[in-house]
Length: 222
Image 1 (tube, helix red, strand yellow):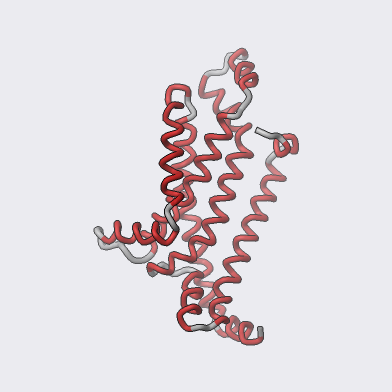
Image 2 (cartoon, rainbow, N blue to C red; image 1 turned 45 degrees about the vertical axis):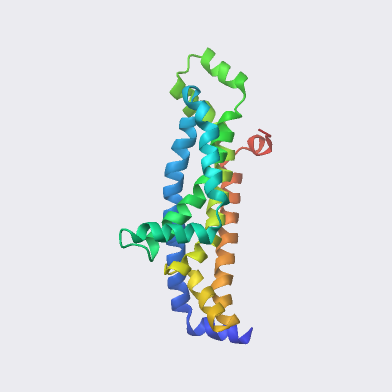
C-alpha cells in the first residue's frame, strides 16, 4: 500500500491526465451511441416500421456477442484502411458499437410497453402521433431509457480501459503497463480510478433518477 501511495504521489499528474482522456473517450463514444440508438429506437416503434424492430435488435445483439477485444481489433483493422488504425478513433468506434445496444433495447422496450389505454386516451383528446410520442410515450418510457443509458455509460467506463491495447491513452494504459512490467502499483493506479469513476457515475445516475423520475414511475413495472 505504501508503494502505491508513493507511486500515485509521484505520478499524480499523469494519472489525472489519463483520467481526463478516459472520461473523454467515454463521453464522446456514449454521446455518439445515444444520438444513434435513441432516434433508431423511436423510429422502429412507429406503427409503420415496427416490423423491423426485431431485426434491428437482432443486429445489435450480434455485435454485442463479439468479445470486446475482438471488436476493438476489428475497429482498428477497419480504420487502418484510412491510416487511423491506432489511437482514439478505432477505440471510439468500438465503444460506440458496445454502447448502442443497451440504449436501443431500452428505448424500444420502454415505448412499446406504454399502456394502450393511455395511448387511446391521448388519441381521444385529439393528440397527433407526434404529440403522443412527445407528451405520452417518451415521458412514460423515460425511466427505462435512462436505465439503458446508465448501463451503457457504466459498462463503457470499464470497457474503455481496453482501448489502451490499440494505443488510445486512458487509464487502461497504466493497467497494461502494470501487467507488462509486473508492477501491481502501476496496475492499481489505473484500475482503482477506473473503478471509482464507474461507481461515481452510477451513483450520479441514481441521483438523477431520484430527482427527475416520480416515485410511482420508478416503482412501475412495464
